[in-house]
Length: 86
Image (cartoon, rainbow, N blue to C red; front, side):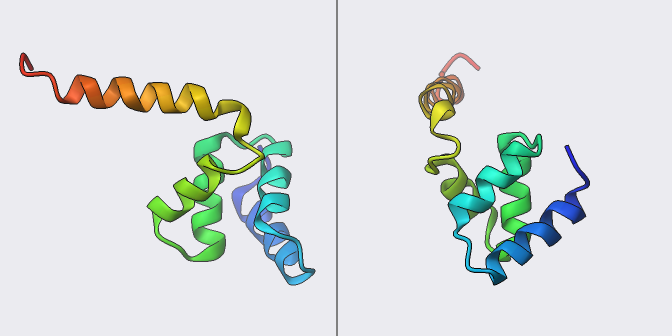
C-alpha cells in the first residue's frame, strides 16, 4: 500500500477533477489497500462518520466481490454475540 496521506491527496485531486466515489475506491484498492483501509481513507477524505464510510465501501461496486463473504462473517459474529452461554 502506498502512503495513506499520498492516497488521500491523490483521491482529493480526483474529486476536484469530478471523479466519483466509485472511481476513488477503485483507485485506492488498485494501490493495495484492504477494505478496512479503504473505509478509513474514505472517512478522512470525505470527513464523514465511520459507519457511513463503511456502508459506502461495503455496498460499492469496487468491493462487490467481498460482499457475500463479509455479510456471512457479520451474521456469524452477531450470532456469536447473541449466544446465551457466553
